[in-house]
Amino acid sequence: MWSGTYEQQPVAGTVNRFYPIGTVNIPVLFSSEYLLIDTTSVNAPLNWTSAGYLRQAFDSPVIGAASAANFSSQKVYLHRLSIIQLPMLSPTYTVLIDVPYRILDISFTIFQYEPN
Image (cartoon, rainbow, N blue to C red; front, side, top):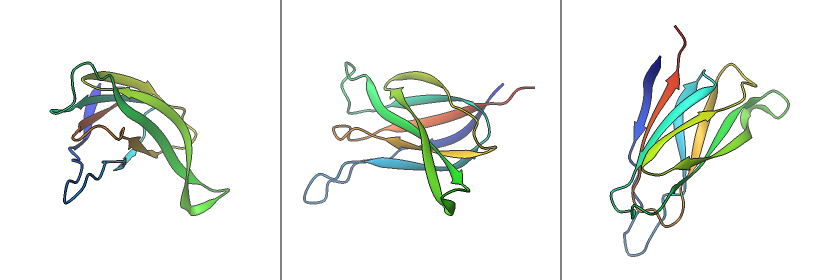
């Protein structure tokens, strides 16, 4: 069963100059190896396909509890659902999404798979 976990709508800054969205840190701990991500953008043309890259991050005992190790990076598609399978190297992990420079607004809805 898919359960809704997180929703965010970052917008690029435009005070006196353009400030891209950049990397969005999703402040949720995920525990499933499968994520479903729905991304949309009001201002992006329909022929743009990339919403960026999702990176998996988890606390690494080798580096230290305060540091996060980035392991897996996978492409996320714009204006469609992306099902992503991530390796389970830790019981919980967080994700970051690197949004391309040209996207002015984006909406993320992230679900994780929870078996019955």
